[in-house]
Image (cartoon, rainbow over all chains, first blue to last red; front, side, top):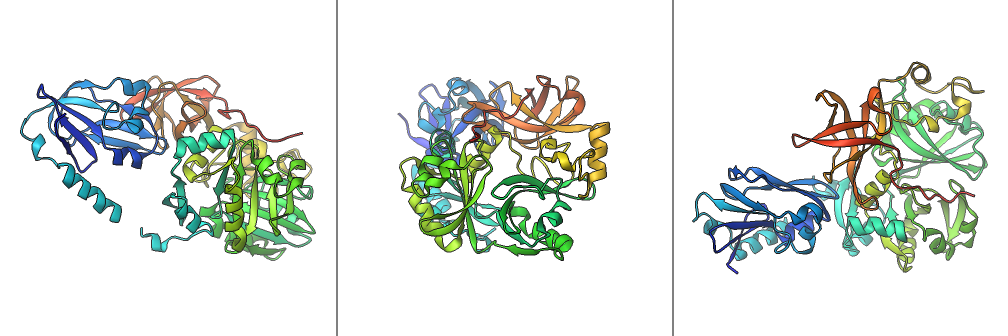
Length: 127
Length: 374
């Protein structure tokens, strides 16, 4: 498995061998959201970086999941339609949201690495 | 807002100790959930028993030979004939018939009434009482000196009976002064979850020890405001400020049942509360909008503020409360709808993120209420 990258919006990204990138929300994010009851998955289309591609609904509230980089969504995790709780149970695995092809293949490596993300969470916890 | 400016209930330290996630609510720093999480807290309450800290709510004592008569001038409810040891749901109305707050009124006997009002409205309610009936009875806010705990769920009676066996004899909406752990409390068999259960008014200084001893019972888990909201929504119960407010009348809010027969237009003590004319007129000539239950026909939760539209896309209403019902196993909502669409099983749609989500007008409660009646 290749190295993970992260966004400040608490998404994780994993570069796959075929050049696509898998996206989900982090363990920290699912814990903050609480029990996930619905995921509106993105359409198979291009989105700009920062666009609200997907929405995750917990018992408490709806939260946007933003496109981490400009690119085209190639696949979505249909399992989440019937089993949104996978986001809580296995956020970094079975609870993935979608795969996309970034417009700029090098952009992924420039996102936060694990250390930088851990520091971000620590800073959040102290805020 | 910094938490420094928020008020704390007498159980605040206990919430932190239990690992609660705290949020500002009605000016208080309150637990929205504990480590169990909203979903499991909700289900635990329906299966066993949940303990809720509702000390932020306002407790007010009215005393005097004319207290019941005086309170009747502010609510469309029979207070004069409320039996000693009984509690009743009521609402303060304004001159337009709008709802200023909803509340519980209990008759303690000896010319004493005990009120529980909403946290966000309690200062305003107190001022309202003082302004309108302050000359006719004594009005004593117990905001600081008493805490309020709710023990809700099918096991609540068994648990509370370990401290006070007489609670098994109480029925829904009965109210009694009882000693719990040697402390004089007021206990009512009522609540806000649709389950059997109790609300316990306890002196602030004794609240934590009572809460700890209830939590020590194996059936009991601490439950936060998140599950409190999903439980009351499944039970079809209104949340003030969301499902009704000063712009909605009891008729529009589908709360006609709460207007006592004796206070209605053809009753022995008809009217005599603010907005009676408007409310009676609405009862006779009808209303243009009404609160109904709504079941989304997809998994998408439909939340407060979502517009409701008909087949042509015309806006015909608004969702006032909505979310996910853990016991129902799906989304649920309440909304105000143009009365042309309020027949059961009518099909309308809500707009969620620009998309239409089909809704069916549904009866409430969404899950059966399980109050203890004989």
